[in-house]
Image (cartoon, rainbow, N blue to C red; front, side, top):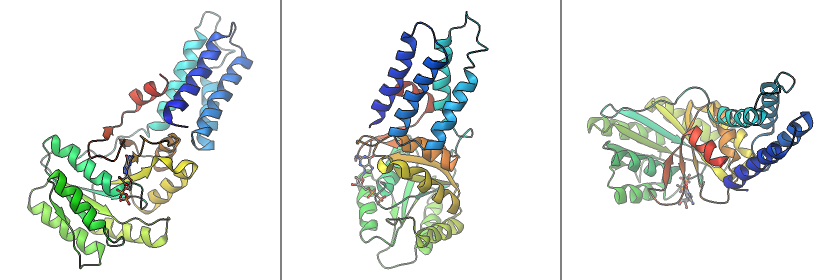
Length: 296
Ligand code: GDP
C-alpha cells in the first residue's frame, strides 16, 4: 500500500462516517476500525495505532458533545491532529546556520540510500548558497568512496576520502578538519552501513560520533522496510544521538507507515524525504501539509 492509498482509505472511512444520519458510538467505532486497519496495513506500528484510536475516542467524547455540535468536523479534526502528533516529536531538529561550520553525520543500514541522500542534502543546501562538503568515512563497503566521489563530482561538491586508510574514525576526523579550514559551513560525514543491525556497525558509529562531535546525526531509512521500521530506528537511536530522520524511496511502492514509526522510535522529526534516484528528487518534509495531502 503506498501512502496515497493509506490516505484514500482514511478519507473513505471519514466519508462513510459523514454519510451516516446519526453519529453514535457504533458509527464512530466503525470509522476508527477502518482507520486502524488502514494504518496497520501501511505498516504503522501497532502500539501507535492503538494509542491513536484511544486518543481520538477520548477527544471525541460523544456523550459530552451537545446535539448542536458538528461531530463530523470534530472527528475529522481529531484524526488530522492525531496523525500530525505521531509525525511531530514536539521539538525541531538542530538547524545548521549558513556561514557557521556544522558537522552532519549520516547513519543507516547499507542500501537505505545513505550515500545518495548525503549528496542530495549537500546539493540542496549548495543551491541555497551554502558551502557543503562530503566526507566518506565508509571503509567497510568496497566502492563506497568511489560512489561518493562520483556523486560529489557531478554536483561540484568538495569531497574527502581515502583508498588506503582503513580506520573510518581517522578519515572522518581528517575530513572534518580539512573542510573546517576551508570554511565549509556544512560538513557531511557519510558513515558505513551493514546489512543488519550488527554490534560492529554501532560501535563504529559511536566512535565516529565521539571523534567528530556532529551537530546533528541524521538517520536514513528506506521507506519500504515496513513493520521493522520502529525497531530499526530505535536501535540506531540507542547507539548514537539521532536528531533527525530522512525517509528514502518514497517514490516506490513502499508502505509509508515506516515514517510514522521512525519518528515515534527516535523522537526526532522527519526533515526530508527522498523521492527518486536523482540528486534533486528530494523534498523538505512538513508535517501538516503532508497529512493534509495524505487525507486529500
Ligand atoms: P547506501 O548503501 O545506504 O549508501 O545506499 P545508496 O545511496 O547506495 O542507495 C542504494 C540504492 O537506492 C541506489 O540504487 C540509489 O539510487 C537508490 N535510492 C536512494 N534513494 C532513493 C530514493 O529516494 N528513491 C529511489 N527510487 N531510489 C533511491
